Length: 197
Image (cartoon, rainbow, N blue to C red):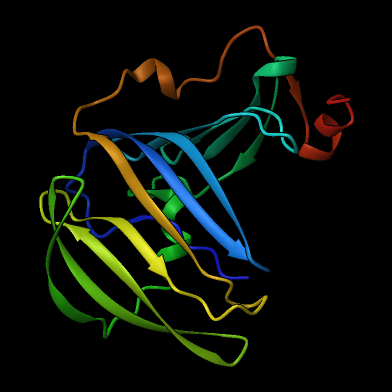
């Protein structure tokens, strides 16, 4: 299965907040997920609401400290994991950076949610298959603010989209990137999961 995320093409976006909407389609069913995303000088916070299958979560990534906090507000608990210390840019989103075709083809200028962007066609491979997808890079920030993978209906490439909406180009409060006090710390996700039920 191929998942598309957003990524930063350069470090020009010092801070912003936005809603992050992703859709995925598999076996005729489409799933839509909407998270709240905050970014400030390399630090990140993603707020994911609870669903019928998953609890509410908050993920804070701090490359400056070399760690990430995975927070479960419903049970006031969290655990830590390492991340690349000192690495700038959108760490959560780097997974898609490797998927961006360096030989991407410029298609044209297009406005996305009121923001001027450049649209590109890209090609990638998954499990020996080649496929085409599209990306939109924001003119003002250099952020990849939308992706569209038409997919081919297979488990390896079911298709999906990602997009920033309600983009606010302002620095979020620094308090959003701190681990909350009064929460129980667990040593791993597996240990924490035992206490979710």
